[in-house]
Image 1 (cartoon, rainbow, N blue to C red):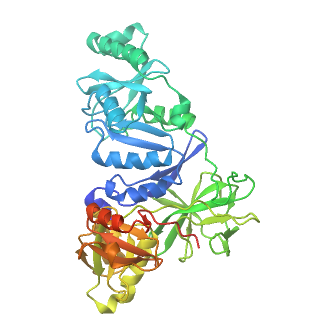
Image 2 (cartoon, rainbow, N blue to C red):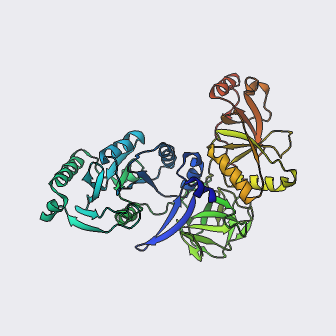
Image 3 (cartoon, rainbow, N blue to C red):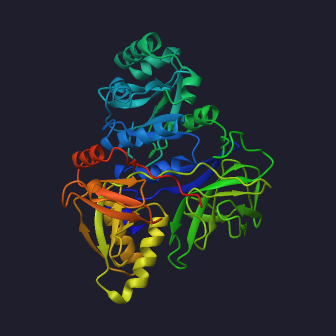
Length: 475
């Protein structure tokens, strides 16, 4: 999106793949800003592991903490790549300490920076005991040339200089004696993160990382349904939709639904059953993404991500299968919204486009729609996880649907779904401190202006169930 170029951040996840040494690696690149953590969580449901990119100079940033928490919720292996090694960086020990204290996960360095005072000239590979040196120039303008030398080579001390050489030997000995032992079972449980140092922009340290990543990363995991504890069979196609993106092609205004294959083989044009409706669908125009290019997906296997043109039938969390037994995947929960606003269009002639745009963006999971009972649908209450999403909503409505919108912020900070048919005055608490609304499925929701107000209402209605995350709707 153009707004991503303007702001210099990602506002939606992207999907692509590449082949390396005979392996297919599917990349699900998530937004780095914490305001889009809900999109990150949805994307991670299709991932088997995560790579956490950390700026070597800044260390663990505020948004990294929230996104890391999302990763921990999924209990998947997490690999760490400390980036920008060709520039000034913090001490690697300081970075390790940050990761372990702030993120509460132990780190095992697979390689180690060679240099002093944040100025690095290469990395030491703890497995091969070799040092990869790079020529520091250009800072991101070129792929740096490098050469490999053994730490046991007599010339190494001369090449590095006595001070850097002695410092490296001392740090390696400290890591070996006081650091954690490498335990693959802890990596698989998300308790230990393999830590790599390099420079992505200059392509230094990337190949060693990919080699180790391919060796350690898990194969595509099986996914179980909400009605059976049995793993999916390997001979039947089964997949679930985890991402929907409207207007990916501005020329055609098409909507793409992305699904992750869990088992079996996908073939272009195959017929599958849509679990939620029971309808039979033909998967035509399947696509995969390689950098900026789209290619036709002729076939796919477990772990592959396929995009298909959708006319509005598919929803996030929907299951597709070819077996005889009906099958529903565990749904994808939504994050509770923390910011709310009245959204309307000042142009009555654009009502149809307004509703279409709001509904399509809602189906992507970017916003949550709430309606006030017995009030016109043109004025809606929109809830978002991060306030920056309002800016994205305004931009997309203007540029993709040709509709100007007015956003009026509301004082509410949390939403609770109430498991009753009718919301009473006692559930709202004090006057003007809460508002009764309905979600897009017609379920009663109360918006509160503070945690204190909600706690008071909850105390007075102990027989009412208040839910922070609503039940997943599969019908």
